[in-house]
Length: 160
Image 1 (cartoon, rainbow, N blue to C red):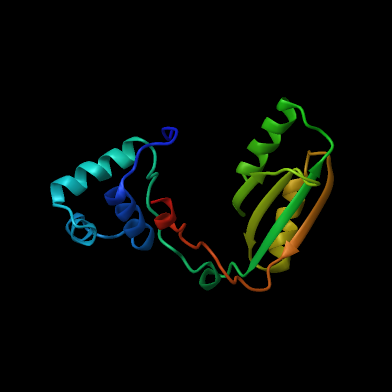
Image 2: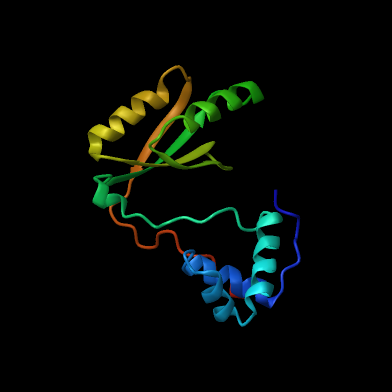
């Protein structure tokens, strides 16, 4: 769990910016990039992990090269809003491997799901699993034609 409004200074921000760009940096390379000794950099890195500001590292994988060529943003409006129903629906969606992002949202819709599949038949199979055993008022899919900005690192320099 992240500490509320954890104190970070310029060196911490430099570490976070460097890791957003390349999470595979060695400790030595990271220390050089941010202008710290390896020990000082390691201590700061450990602290950022311990307070939950860094939650892991990931590789940027070209999902299209794996045949996952359809990205769909699924908007859902529900008929039910009880905690029990919501908990069950969340667990159901969590079990669907096509889901890469899932949000509860405000406004006309209740949920937004980002899905990646192999073509339209893959999306239809996902859709059938999604609606099974759940009374949903409306499910609408918006199909991505092109990713213009995708997984952009957060500009942490504006926090200084």
